Length: 576
Image (cartoon, rainbow, N blue to C red; front, top):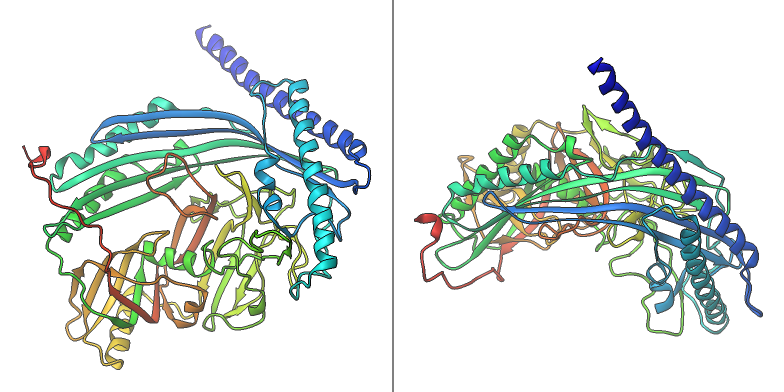
């Protein structure tokens, strides 16, 4: 009898949660669709173009942080929100509208048209907020459209700006993925954070350490005037492990590690994290006796492990450099606004040209959910414009650039969306960003053979040593774990204070070897990773890359701007 009662209670609990989710989805989509229909037919200003397209995405999101140090909690927080983002009211037509125009109004359009909605399922209040957002968006779009037409008449535009439709006409898409609970197991994450951070207690050479668990759980609801309706979840968690030490000469060295998962169940085992915390702490101790790199090195460099994955991200998907995302040249207005965001230089001119060695290929597979049993956080069913991504988007084939990641804004060579326009959280700024990137190299070799090739290449250049990089930062291109390899004995020496200018797409031509094992990096893309932030930035993304990459020629120099400070006057309390 007791068992039957428990089953009844469990059934009621589960069906209640399902009913609430169904109610939320119904209320939100009905509110969006009613306001889209009302405003599409009703928005009109004398002398201004009428809207022809309206789209909106409502994001139910819970953002959280669990921050601890040396086994004690420092801060915990949760922030549930419901936000309407990417509220697009386009005026004109698909060929010529208010998109692709450069001025301050267009630059801040996503922020100025955003709306905060009630957490409760109040149809009237949701519609009221959307009504205000669409009204604001329409007026802004109409102003931008008129300024754009004036600029087209009065100013000579760059080649490739005109003669291309402003927005690709979409097809009706219906996506209905099960919603997720936005709640987190707070106590479990507190216990996890405290336990793993306590592993730093054994190391008195550290001057600071902590563990942050940050992330979000969200359900996204998208509707547009083309009839598309999409419901799907987005979730990701990041563990940031950080520690720093001060060397005898005053230099402060920081190291950190990232772990990403879809949810609590996917977090790495605590013992694994504690083991890597001990390894990180031992590496920081090794910096105290490591010789300073005081040379200008130009020669072969082998990137292994984490550094190999970051090399892939930096050469092709780093937002601050030229990357493999399609960028539309904007019509220049009469204001001082930039024609393109910083770093947004299109690779279109490289299409059908060689950018990497023969046998090198890059494919984005955003519908791929696991690899070798590892869940891939970059997998997603539909983008923020209601476009279902292609199963495969070939970017590089046999060293030749074949395509770019794109949304619904056509460019000179990329005419159609391949479904990569996604929402960056917490900035809530839509961007073109990868999902699941798979990198292959036909001439792959075992790691030991790559090391031999590294040494042989260095000898051919007349060098006495070569360099191996096993860790570097995701955003500042700082080399963290660097080893000098004696070309005669093969002996490795750990060094410090080595630096380089980073990698760009042009460096792919210098690639002469890759490892034959695969490395899966679950991470985020579209924004710099901030290890010390109380939020998780960017879009979930996965990079499946060779476990090592050998570049023929990279310049490495001494870091001339080390983080220096005077040594503490009083002894570290951890030493007492």
